[in-house]
Length: 247
Image (cartoon, rainbow, N blue to C red; front, side, top):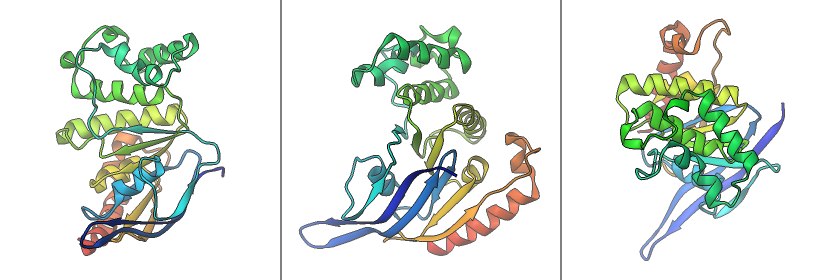
């Protein structure tokens, strides 16, 4: 197994005029190539804070992150598409902002657009796209920078139940095909079990790693059929009890 990221004894404390609030306490974790990791835990426990530290949007009070020269991409909670830009221009936006819009990178994005069912919508504007299509555009924009590791923070929270299932399956398959490593923050235990091979349960604040579940399904079971297995229900009941106890 190839290690792609290490979280090294991370702690984070926020200071106000009146008090200090410790959000995260002494979290250490190794993540390996092609891992799909879910971070779950009670609301406000520090999941998104940890993701922000991994993405270098926030700094830890103590500890650090080792990336082993792997690049990190981030898919926002909302699809955050610009309504005045068509599908192609939304997909190319990250490359433009980072001054990496070369012909080679544009061809890479065009290939992703074709591969994942958006070729006929390349000149379409976001308000004429379904929720699933918008999520695919957002994902392609994140993938355009060719990250080794993709971070996702509650990416399906605004969707209805059926759309959430369909789109999470869709994005799971895309990330597998693109050979990515995923770190997902979610409140949805079903989503975590369905998408990830490892689930990290965080305690209430200050967040520590309470338990790690390795998720294994028979390889003959398709992604969409995992939810109907006994193993899925067993995982759900165990993880729900752990998270509920902390809430």
